[in-house]
Length: 132
Image 1 (cartoon, rainbow, N blue to C red):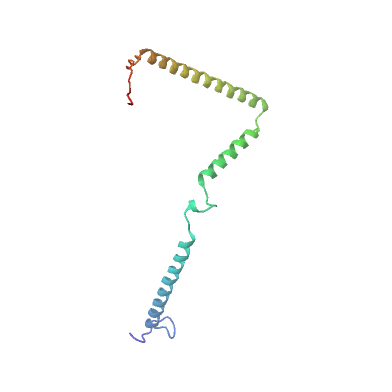
Image 2 (cartoon, rainbow, N blue to C red):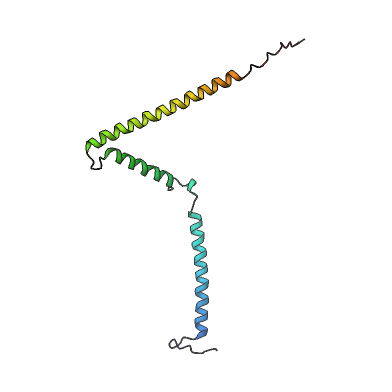
């Protein structure tokens, strides 16, 4: 096998190719080990980095911006629409207020009924303590 010609050109033997492949493999493992050492030392958890990306904050900021844009943009709709939309919003809030008030009244009635049904605890006798 020594000196056997593989047909890839003059001077290229199987033995020379295998030696070159071993050197390349060794060089690649050394490079990857060095690269791994460099990347591990540079990476930090998100909590330890000041400028770390926070997806929740990004999303909240986007939603706040969208909300503000929709409030200040008429979307090409006539002004009469917005007058009625505001009135409808106000009516919906007033309806919600009625529901909350009714729920509060029911809670107050329930508490009064429970207090009425609840018996007063018996009075305890006087306890005398002698410190002498």
